[in-house]
Length: 186
Length: 186
Image (cartoon, rainbow over all chains, first blue to last red; front, side, top):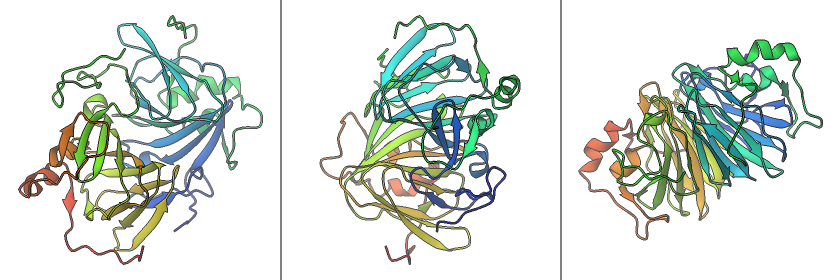
């Protein structure tokens, strides 16, 4: 049952383009994209779930904190399966929290809450679900970044052209927060 | 930030009852329930996501195939993090598939597709998301089964009273399919 499909996103994908079709995807073989130093892999998206949820992984090296951002209409799950991730999140009253997440630990970021994370070990993997009443935003990563057939982290970080930041984030419910500061000390 | 809340489901829960609140839950400490031989742990549900998705784990021993069932309005993800799971699924045309899922492997079951699974190793863990346009159904496990404060598998399988099968599954979009047969051979 390893069938490859042509979809709106890939000439070869293991995700059936038509809804209502069961499928299996072996580890690593979802729709992959590189963005900065990370590998994002989509296993299910809005087309599969009547736009209720998605399911993806993010793998990366030990590195810097990613830019603070929020999602006006999207709730986001961080579930760590390998390595360690320090998740930073600010609630709607402006109170800030941070937590080092190890494998099996879970973090929840509601819509509109500023957040960021830093992978604190090499070979870290996060499982993500990011969705809300307005839909799902799993194709953000390949639109700000770039689709790839590789199964590995980018050999060199993929840095998007500056012009993309003006349009792509808003299309996928991502709002970067330049100048945002974390006062949690981590 | 380990705050315990009283919620509609637990006198002590790490899931904030009011929406819009960020939170972290360490491995194993979500809302737990025993059902048959398995331990289900809910980390997020409909209240947290405006009813768009949930996030839970299912841990169990090597055992028998669970009863075939379907969800008229719910899409379901099976993502294996430990052990091995054989997932059986039938598409809407009646064609049947099975696949042995190892850690990192993914299975997707659309609404209305009969399915079942069998854990094929002890200490197996599945990450699940089960939701659809009608909502999320993460409280099925503790309503057919029983809430627990334990962090471990049930010492003895928790077998629901027979009368519960007449009411609880339908309330949580679960339709058991007695007599359903898997012809896939696995």
